Length: 261
Image (tube, rainbow, N blue to C red):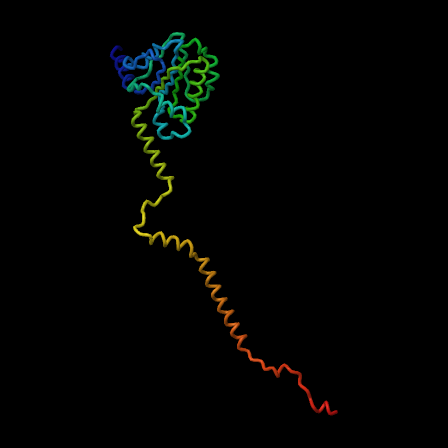
């Protein structure tokens, strides 16, 4: 039986998914060099300086954000400017059992975080821990959910809390930044209009462009029609001027016989 239990324990350790903790420390009393695990950070948290733990047991938040980082303000700000420490290859985090730690577990984002936090007595907690067991989430919904949690705790306690975001990611922040830069560059090239960078060696090409703008097809047709009408007018005037009418033909004829009668 002992042998079987050892094998089972070994299997659990092998199958335990490695995770990465992205930590935003506001507590100046914690020295970066002494941070060796997320458990250490949780243990150093106090009621006056609490910590918010956002753990995604199966979901890969950073990879989802890299695939779609539009309209995700909280996570973008967190990963690009808020992270102070990154702890990789962490196994499943151990939950504290004391009464000063509030832990809420869920699979889907079906619970309103405000309703959960209002009943949690966060003012008496040194750690507020949300565990998400779902494998995939809409990154935009996650962004709004996490932002609501952090804003409520900070405004309720009037303190800048330390934040630990633990997820099943294997992507590093450097890979994330490179991936986002590549996507931004490709998006810019796709939507930008091509501009000509070549300059003519002489003024002939520029002159041709100007002439092509002036001598349009409509203008040429108007000139052609005007020329034809002008020719017709000239021909008509020449015909009129060539007519010869004698003055005698316009006089009234008289019959001398009628006068003698």
